[in-house]
Length: 517
Ligand code: NAD
Image 1 (cartoon, rainbow, N blue to C red):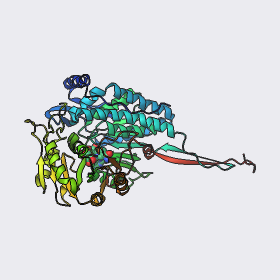
Image 2: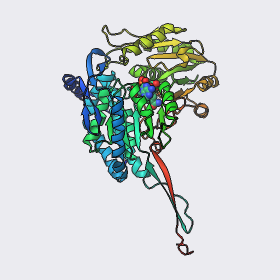
Image 3: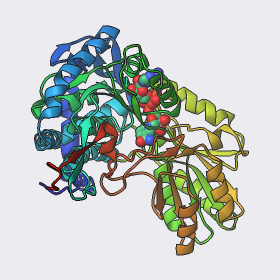
Image 4: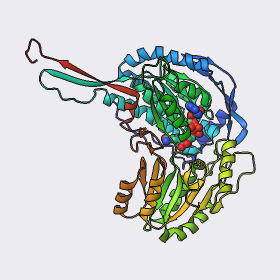
């Protein structure tokens, strides 16, 4: 059984690596727009209902996708149901081999796929390349875990009795994915469902269908039989149709809390004729706080806070949205943050010098701008913005907004950081504890006692100490939130695969004619 090791990241400090990235984007550009079909049982139906533009250059169409209809959803679930039986019956090692082959396909195309993310989602090169590496990691890690777990747990078996536990695939899994980790998250949920013997209907985000096609193609090239994975591009209604479909037994969803709660409510009502409880694995949004204690090293805090808040324009679920600063260092840190803000470059994702790229779409740009305009508190914005029609929003610090205001409570999903002065570490922890979201958090301190105190008090799923709050790595930092931030399913960790299968215990009486065997 191959051991798992993380895929190395591209070393973009090297000129030759940057040159390969530029070449990949130059080779991709003439192929745009990509045509993304509905794919059911291997049959492809093309269309141009959904346009996926480049957020840095909106006139450039990156993908044209066919919108899956209600009858496509039905056909895909039927095809998946038919294909699942044989797929679920093959040895786990054979399924793991297909995941590893898909990982190899992604690795072979890593520059091209990073370029696709740069174009389709305005994801800057370092983050785009890391996203492709994470997708590769998910495939290899879940392949590894499935093999490790295949034997099942050891159960007590007294003389005359043999007990064993194994897991059965749940059936058809609907994977409903967001656009912000357009290959990694959709690929990770898909790989987990597949390796545990389920068939999948993948509904990618409407903003990133081109990236979803790359995932489908990697699994197809790896030898996945037709019908085991079906691709259903579409908007929310396509996802909603999958959630209530009686043939879908598991929904793996990553996205906003609002949609996640809708999905959980819809999945809780069995459709007529449905013979199972639909399980929802949900990873939702956050409102992540970084606590800066009085003894923190501000040389570390400033870059970590700005990277966590403004990297990928704040469009990571793990992004820092609140900086809770001890009053003894608040004035010093404020001066340094404002100074550092002025050094951030806002620009197109393909420029290696860009710190803050365009946001995903015009609606997001308008929504975030309105939040900043309405924010009470002292706001400082960076810039300048490029003089073109990319969907840019300046990175903005809002100092001491009133408690309970939008900026302190709601996930903005843009480059806006609320900087709040707190009288003590305990007060900072109280503010975190008041929130319904509990995804990531960070603390900067030199004291082990403070680390212990914050760790014990924090409700978040992932706490980072003296480092940014973003950038979870498969197998090293299993990722996922608590409270309204998710079902605690920890993607990329040893507990994840269990969500996609049902446990079965077989108890055998070994006594024959009263003689214990
Ligand atoms: P979103 O909730 O708008 O959409 C996610 C997916 O759900 C898309 O495919 C969308 O088409 C689909 N959808 C929309 N309405 C639906 C419905 N009624 N029924 C079924 N499906 C529906 O989220 P987004 O804008 O794509 O992504 C950003 C959000 O995702 C943020 O809130 C972010 O924090 C969160 N996120 C969380 C994690 C995590 O691991 N916790 C990771 C990435 C993103």
